[in-house]
Amino acid sequence: MAVTETIPRERGGLLKRQTVTEAAADAIRERILAGDYAEGENLRQDALATELGVSRIPIREAFRQLEAEGLVTLHAHRGAVVSSLSLDEIGELFDLRALLEPDLLARAIPRTTEADLAAAAKILGRYEQSLDGPDVHAWGEMNSEFHLTLYRPAGRDRSLGLVQSLLGNTDRYTRLQLVLTSGIERARAEHAQLLKLCRQGNAQEAGDLLRRHVQTAGEDLLAFLRQHRQA
Image (cartoon, rainbow, N blue to C red):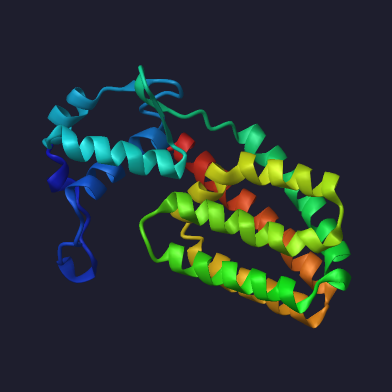
């Protein structure tokens, strides 16, 4: 079946507007999540183009999109390879974030200046704009920078370094969570509320919200992946 025949329809039977690249990315993404393509498996551009009834160009662009989402890794000599998604690793990384980040934020809030808050607000604005665009890589970068900007006033460089490493390690999982679990609107609301609580100097509520924010993101992604692996 050609990929153009798999484009979903909206309510009322109208054809949903979708480029060939998006349709190809959707088809490949679904197969990866369903386990049809194993972790570490090479994705052959020519074979997929033939199978999905498209040229190689949208397949190549779909690979780039899926790499941004964290589902595919592009290698110079091997081409596109299905990324490893370890459920144990995802759980551990998000658990560590939920332990370390609220403590760091609580220590940062009493030392946060108006300049710090202005910087965080500016980054949050850029993050909001990135969510309306197709650059999924930017979502992860802006998300990490927003969080780190809130934590820096704590003045705990070793803790900040650990959290920065964790954010880097969870970056593709965070992007996956936003893409796969429709988490964008909740992320918008929770980030805005987090900044508001920091402005108010409410370390307790800010820490509680941040803990839920991180834990829920990890839990939602794990639930989604488990459901698709069982399907």
